[in-house]
Image (cartoon, rainbow, N blue to C red; front, top):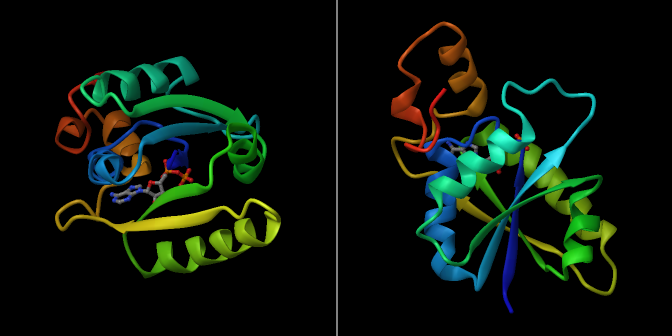
Length: 153
Ligand code: ADP
């Protein structure tokens, strides 16, 4: 089985994330959207809320699942027998950051190498980020244009 893990905070899931998963869904047998838990981070939405937003957003996608994990993404991949990490690229800053992480993840895996597969953001979605969405929500703005319908606060 060709399974990909799409790791991130998803605080909350945005139309940028949605676009990447929607386009990757036909390329893999299964996609696991995996929320990384970091006790040092302060989140706007609880883990359960974030999972619920994702579950509802992809209810019509039989091969998309949601899960959460703590620790290294490659260790999570190993525990699930997964060989692919899915990531989105928005801009050169994402590229530099992602390059270091992908090369590290490859170096950290021995017998079962984990390859990172990148999809470029669709035009019109590259400015969307969870942090901008949180900023808009906190000031009472029109966040709905940037998130799937399932995300309502
Ligand atoms: P992290 O906390 O690791 O930054 P995010 O939830 O912000 O996690 O993002 C997870 C993944 O989604 C990353 O690969 C990121 O590049 C991608 N992503 C986020 N926003 C967009 C977007 N607007 N278009 C394409 N990919 C995106």
